[in-house]
Amino acid sequence: MFISRTGHPKRTGWLRMNAPGLTIWQAMRSRQVILLTLVYFFAIIGIYGFVIWFPTIVQRATNLPNMAVTLLSALPYVAGLAAMIWNGWHSDRTAERRWHTALPLFLGAGCLVVAIRLSSHLSLAFLCMVIVGACTTAFMPSFWALPTAILTESAAAASIGLINSVANLGGFAGPFFIGYLRTLTNSFTPGLVFLLVCMVFSGMLALLLHVAPMRN
Image 1: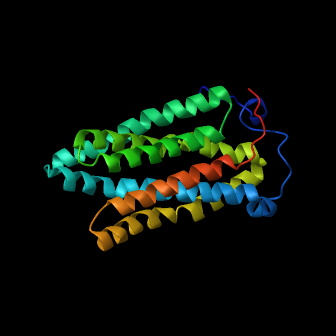
Image 2: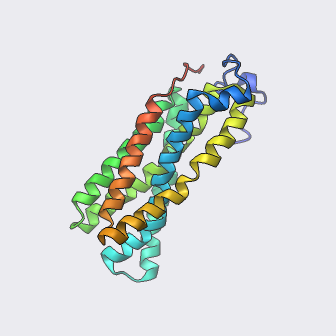
């Protein structure tokens, strides 16, 4: 990565030198930063809700030994690595960020719907859940390119801290509400529906962002 990067920001194609001259405080109050924070907040709900509860869902559905559950639970991470690399590469190649952020979230939500509907077919449902796991990480490269594409360098640095700080509260909300809904209903289905709604909402908010065309 370090070898392939250029030696100065002005020679990059993904940092905009003519970005609007917002101060740090103005940037943190701007509509764009608020949208970025909400996009990541709802996406993180989906990520952590899935990551924390997926092994339990696999164990309850299959009654397999712990070692087998652990190995099966690792597959979404393997798929996620490949999906993240490909989506980030394609986003850079096409100089497009919003749809490369939104589409993985929409696809993940759609696969959750299919997994819920096919819950009696374990193999197909598990395959869908692996795709969900891949999608929850695939959006990240293009998402984290958005602050530097929208804001000045100093404003982007402060805004990234704000986005991370606020949005990571979703890391508590996702697992908590899945557990809470499971306690109320004795089923994981309401919790998974909650996750897919959050992922769809995150993708829709990403499409509301205004990103100026990047230089190739």
